[in-house]
Amino acid sequence: MDPFGRHIDYLRVSVTDRCNERCLYCMPEGYKGWAQRADHLSADEIVRIVESSTDLGFRKFRLTGGEPLVRHDIVDIARRIWELPGVETLGISTNGLMLRELALPLKQVGVRSVNISLDTLDPATYQKLTGGRLQVALDGIEAAAAANFEIVKLNCVLLRGINEDQILPLVEFGAVRGMPVRFIELMPLAPGGPINDGHFFSITEAMESLAVHDVLDPATNKPAGHGPARYFRLRRRGAHVGFIGSITCADFCATCNKLRLTADGKLRPCLGRHGEIDLLPALRSNNVTSSGLADAIHDAIANKPENHTFTDDYQNHRPMTAIGG
Ligand code: SAM
Ligand code: SF4
Image (cartoon, rainbow, N blue to C red):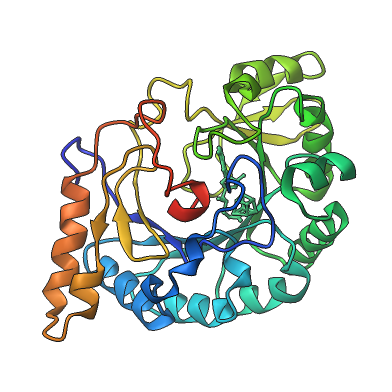
């Protein structure tokens, strides 16, 4: 339990801050955090941290980044985590570009759920927003469907003036594939670039725009997952849709059950607050005791703030891609 009575059993593990895309809301122009390679965790170190966390009751894990699939040893990392006693679920978040080659190997080593970013079905907008090719991401989504993961979800960051016309098309795209789409409010984690507060589009507005076309019934059973989304079912289309109101939902943090591990070895109790606990001393000193890591994880839980303060101050060197989404 953290100081606010929340049961913390979910670790999001960022395996890299590198990416093969460059989403305007995630990675600021010129970001090159990965230049400090020496600080980045090895596969052995990631597995050791996950193992320590299972001793403390962590059960759910998600690999993320940056783009986790650009790491050459990602399948091996997933396999080693899944084989640890105490690990109950393992998911991965990806932009989908490398799923054509990696969906099946990831499924075979135990990955249960895949979240794939898809902000638009318009190739030109996709290219402008991410720097990548839509068709490659779509091929990856089909590969994920063919690999028979327990659950595949699509994630869309809402951006006024850029993709609000894509809300219904994305829901329909997901519906025919049995993939819930989750709409996420823009968090100010890469400001100073071309995406700014003027692009903010709330989940309330997204719900209103869907309600013009269909009826949103609150979902009685939430699609598998541990995230903060509120789910609805579109009555006529049968689609499941999730809404993540990180900015506008007053009780957003009340059920937060996670810590984040950054690719450079910091535990981050809250995405929207600066505090981080450095695991490298416990991990790399010559006279390490296994309790060193456990103490650091305890510390992170004890320092988990009650809520985020996204808008108060921004850390230039910690955009979303560096923290781990
Ligand atoms: N590269 C993978 C991907 O794109 O799914 C995993 C990492 S990414 C940082 C994880 C999620 O964070 C994605 O769904 C992405 O859209 C979301 N994200 C990134 N920057 C964001 C921001 N500023 N506000 C809201 N969501 C953001
Ligand atoms: Fe890369 Fe994912 Fe960030 Fe886009 S959202 S730049 S794909 S890490």
